[in-house]
Image (cartoon, rainbow, N blue to C red; front, side, top):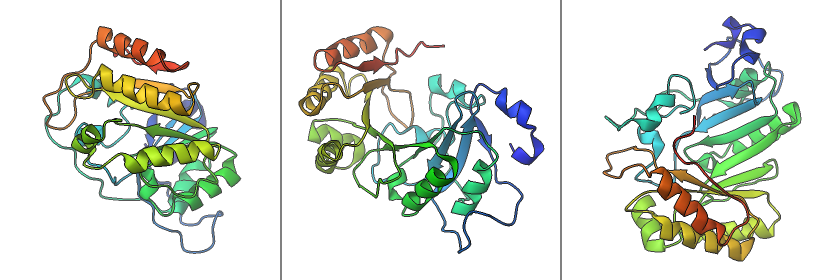
Length: 274
């Protein structure tokens, strides 16, 4: 969708995210020097929540159940929402084009935004992210949220909240799922908390792989840092060439109850939400 072809009124009446394309402008009022290339390949906008999602390509993990194996754009786009329940047929193609900082700012400048999510695969690998976050903060006064595996730390001066993905506490399981040890992740988790960063944690329940007992171990680890940190449990959705099934409602509820033995704020997606 090209914003130059869309009225502002029609934008604000949308309740689901939709894709944004580059505007046909050749100049930028934001920066005068050559604009750094980013790893951003896709941007979506949800007018109802005034939320922009910036999708970054590239990751330092090779997660077996990564949703990017099935679709690289926002799964909540109307044309993609059905993919949650579908089997993977083939591996999604990598993006062919990437935006520079000027492109991103031009796309955002006519939107009414309050929140910017830095997500996709792993945003922290993009060396231009700190500069982009600073410019977005300065220009739009947004809440900037970084979604990250925190295996690598970058400058977080202009990041207001970190939604960290914690795959597993058992290191051998983490190695099996991601290809990497979790030692840096757990160290950085504690480091960010001690630095006073606003944190929330997300883990995925995968039947016969990352099961309820591992979710309980994750919850116990978090509680040893702060039992009031928000913890989100998501169901596995089929992606890649895996044999795992999606968890059922009973399994999600059991995982939630197990986590609540240690944590005060636990959210679990049942998988049957509308």
